[in-house]
Image (cartoon, rainbow, N blue to C red; front, top):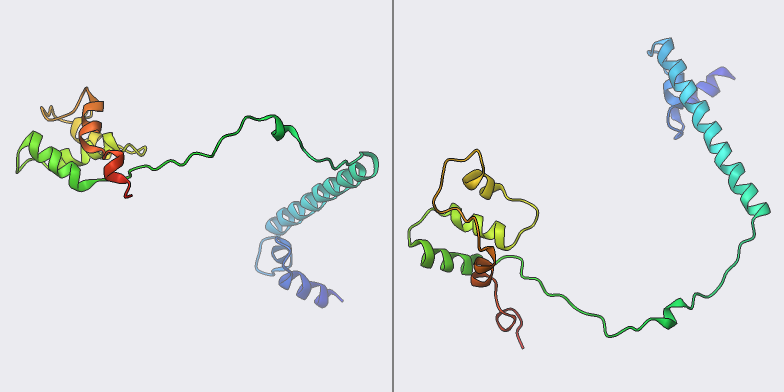
Length: 158
């Protein structure tokens, strides 16, 4: 009987039971896992009983939702976002900074124009801990955005 129970505990898929039956664990570990298993079964029992009580005493109703009929809806919109345009960034930085130039500036402009939550190059080159860099962009960000970002006619193909 105990051998069968031990085999069951060692091979069951219930988490924690295996640790209770293992021979090489310290008795305190076995007590810890026993307490955890009992607490989880107790908590599960409370949740099941609460669900059963709700099922028995609370009315469940199914209705058709009609609030959407009052909405003034139009045709859904579609957004097209330009993610990256490395070629155009290269052309703009060559025109503004000359060729060759510090190509980290290309990455800074990419981070500013196509901001995705990261600004590694901007912090490395222009941050408060970085040495002074005259090429750092500190204002008129929209100018760079307009220079780099494509127009709708360039992005969309008819």
